[in-house]
Image (cartoon, rainbow, N blue to C red):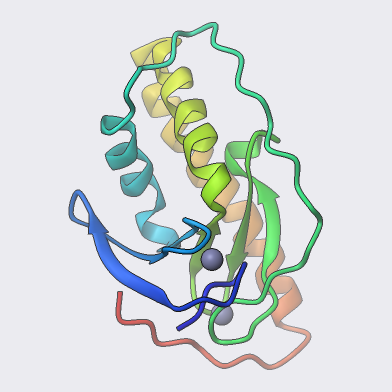
Amino acid sequence: MSCPRCQQPLRERAVDGVPVAHCASCEGLLVKTKHTIRLVQALEKQLETAPTKDEVIEPVPHDGVTLSCPSGHTMVSSGYMGARIAIVDRCEACQVLFIDGREVEPLVRQYARTRARGDDRREHLDKEHEAMSKRVDAMLRARAATKSIGGGGFGF
Ligand SMILES: [Zn+2]
Ligand SMILES: [Zn+2]
């Protein structure tokens, strides 16, 4: 299984119990879509400094390159949680999400900042995440319907 970004071998590991495939070369992370929120929460615990609610998070510029998942499907880019801070890439067929190495911390800080703005918004945030995932999944399904794709069987 190779990295969508740099084609180096991905190594399976766990981040606080959440299974991911990690690229040691670009620090990218491939995660099952359903585990994304758990991964972000696990990584939030590892932040050296917690973001304040007013922290400015610089968006990570997207290079516009279309990535392929390790099974060779075309991945679709979208802003994580509807924001443009980190543009992540998904494969609907394999139900995986790829986070570029340089996107990991801004993405986690974005999540943490939203929480810092009020724990009462936590539920709202998770709902937002879910709604975003559903929108993207629906879009991907519409695309996938136009071509035949095989499922990818990843062990992580
Ligand atoms: Zn890589
Ligand atoms: Zn795929």
